Length: 415
Image 1 (spheres, rainbow, N blue to C red):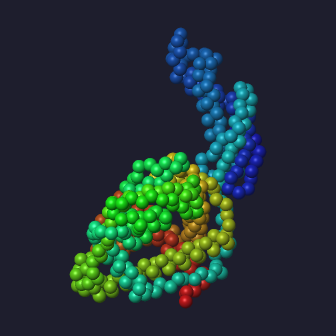
Image 2: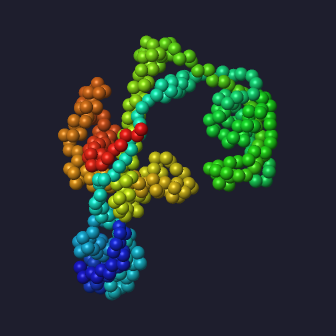
Image 3: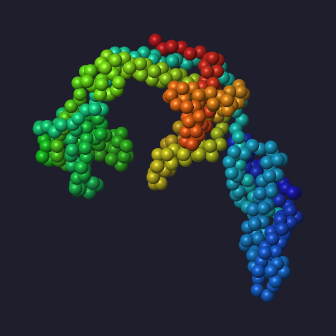
């Protein structure tokens, strides 16, 4: 194909190339498209496939033109990839296409290419590992949370106190100052389920009573339109309930698991907290080290990679269409960090030959099966059916990468 390429943007991950395909090559592909239509055309007065070319071109002009454009762009694209040696990471985009009968076809090709990531510096970093110590207070707090989960709510008389659950009818005035009919809410006072001014109003109101007064909305309220505004609020308290948590005794320990005494429960809770604390400390070290690696090895990101991550989160969180643009804008920095992290991990794994093989995955499945007390084949089939094997492979790869990275850098223990 006789093709002329004029680079418009040659650096970074986004490339723009002006492409011009010779009239001869365009005409050849147009003729090919015309012949295809002529061989299949059924036109009045002509036997199938025998209609004259001028008639076919006139009858199917738009379809032939579209097919010709697609064929020219497709073949030209392959020439561009081979000639420029580009590693494209997303579907190309065509802009400013121009073509008239008998002329060259010109268009601008917009591409995203794989970034160059040298990773020149992977050592010499210093990170601090948080303490994984678990105190007696931590254990007691966890036991209190377990008691709260099994607490019951009992109705009582009188105004609510912090920690009580209230059922209220609540309404705030609109822009015209009119207070609409209230909606029913169930709130636990002191847990931030309502703004402070509304909670104060609830605390002042006894069951069966209604209180109405101005309330100022916080300056950092999520809804920007309401920030700092003062609105008339009406509250009707329907009922007040207090929490009754079970006593921390041997009976409670038996109710939550296979524990004969509360001390046995306390020992298990401490062990669980210590295990989670170690995991959190390890995750913190990994995150801190990766942040330094990424900062020391900057590289461009193809926008499509970031858009893919944002799109997956939009779907996972089921973000409404009207909120999608705002969500995408706010979430983009998070998506960019995630993509950079993934790119760095994958490149280190390739260079250090840490990419797991099938035998590595089988070994991990066997280990998990032993821990869970199930046959390895059964667990493998379950993971495969759920589509979890790639995640398991990724987990193995990340463990190897971070083990190596940590060996190349300094980890200090927090005092």
